[in-house]
Amino acid sequence: MRRIFIFLLLVNTLSVMGQITLSGKITNKQGIPLPYASLIITNSKTSTISDHQGMYTLTIADEFVNHSLIVSAFGYHDKELNAYDLKENNIDDIVLEEDPTENYNLGEVVITAKQWKNKVIGKKKRPMLTHAIFFNDNAPTIEQGSIFKVDTRTKLNQYNFHIIPSAKFKQITLKLNIYQVKDNQIDRPLLAENIIYTTSTTGWQTVDLKDAKILIKDQNEIAITLQLVDYDKLPEEEFNFGLSYVMSPSKNLLFRYQNRSPWEFNSGNFLANIHVDYEKNNTSKMNKSDEEEMDEEESEEITSLGLRQILGAYKAEKGKKASRFGKNKDGQFISIANAKMYYEVYGQGEPVILLHGNGGSIVEFYQQIPTLAKHFQVIAVDTRGQGKSTDLSSEAYTYDLFASDIGSLMDHLSIKKAHIVGWSDGGNTGLSLAIHHPEKVNKLVLIGANLFPEGVEQKVLANFKEQIEFNKEHDNRLFQLLLDEPHFTTEQLKAIQSKTLVLAGEFDVILPAHTDLIRQSIPEATMQIIPKTTHYLLQEAPEEVNPIVLEFLQKMK
Image (cartoon, rainbow, N blue to C red):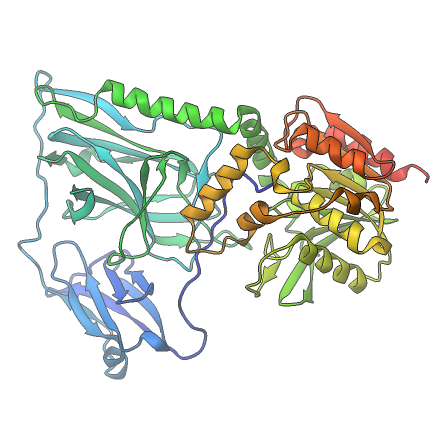
């Protein structure tokens, strides 16, 4: 099954061939640099933001070089230029003129104890289960946030938000934006000055707004967003960043690619809240019952997906983050059809191939590799398009395709026959390999596998459908695979020649009757259910799982 945390890397539109690069400084007429100004190529996703010194670099694909370049900054008139003309005339610096009408400075606020009260609006609790839309350096100006209901006179004191723990960066710089909401649409900005926040940590973050003296007047709703403006990568790690959100029927996930892109509204709520002071005599647009309703909605989401699964996923992620597996300097790549497959090898002896779950990587087996490598040659693989393995094809993913890739890897390594240990989707790939390439499979270990989609809890499948709808403009082949496949028949399983061990968690998302059907259908298969574990039994109970797998693989035929 797909991992709980969602890793989404947006694809940039820049072409590899035929491009120009502009660089320089953005200033006002007095020559003062304008930090964090936006540069946008119209009718494209090509954009950038100037740094804290007003410097910018923008690479433009050949197909967009004659499009207009729009340069904008708070308190200044937008400037429309032609990118090609700038390059041809060696124009580096761009000067913006002040716009006295664009002054949304909300002024200093005087607060007395008798007139004002305080409260917190938004998501205050952090559930174990969170999602994120991940962005990498192909989306350099991405902006995302939420709408908050406020009183007609509200002072913003603090903005809190949550960065998904699995984000990877050394440091990021974000720009906080506040917008008027009008007729359920994001309208004009409400700030005259930049509010910049820099962090090197994940988890809960706090932006202190007291010094900004932001008073919201005559508004029922505001949108608060964060825009990525700069970042530093970790050594030998790909940069990615995402704000945590929880699934919810309300469409309160806002994002856009750049300042002039249309806003997209999607189902869910970001983990974010604002600490405010509000006038006591005004009617609150979000009263106490509204806040309680939001917390109940969050709790309902946790229950609907199963608290045990959440705890299992949390434990798995926590352990994997500290693991060295999946980033071994001795790891290797091989080229296969339209892809490069990454693998790592540990130990000596009979070969054992480890196949991870949907959206996962080698690190899923961080608790098993050390144990197995004492007795076997362990080949841990990143499946096509996952982990470090790449995929340049556009064809739909199938377990037969993944099995064929494993066959190619075995041929490359001159391995005629190997034990296969597959977890979740890896188990499904192992089944395909045993059915269609029986000569390559010695013993087979299936952990949390399924024969057809209906063998999975329906609430989980519904969650995958929501994710596809939410990310419909992007590559959803891994999600779609979970909904479309597998479709193994019991007749196919009856023909499997390999000795087979079937494992599952007591509280697995694979239905118990379905796991038992696999056991019944494969000749002489044995089955064990690991008590008090979920679909993440590999990480939850290695002290129980590892001896069972080791004994099965070492047992004489």
